[in-house]
Length: 109
Image (cartoon, rainbow, N blue to C red):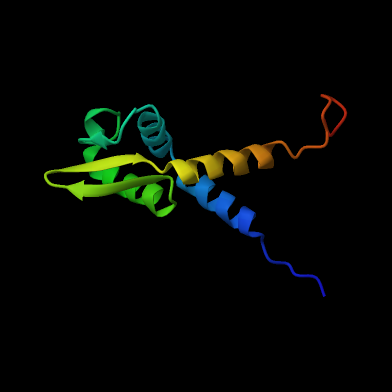
């Protein structure tokens, strides 16, 4: 009997993809990835994101493990979770390189 369950890699890739499924979250990750250290401050001051929605976007990214943060009164510190960031890079690279149809025009279309 064959198992029809998703692999751990597929589950993790889907979790990362879902977390990155909004332009505001892409902007947040891009901003944090370009910082040399963790960011202390209000991200809505740096990006075109409404203050009211920043928290939910940060929460989604944190729950997916792409960023990490801790409250340090009166500001919050956020940074990329480097270990999971590398894992996401590897999983997306592996996923996107699976196409066996290497030559343009040799597959559908």
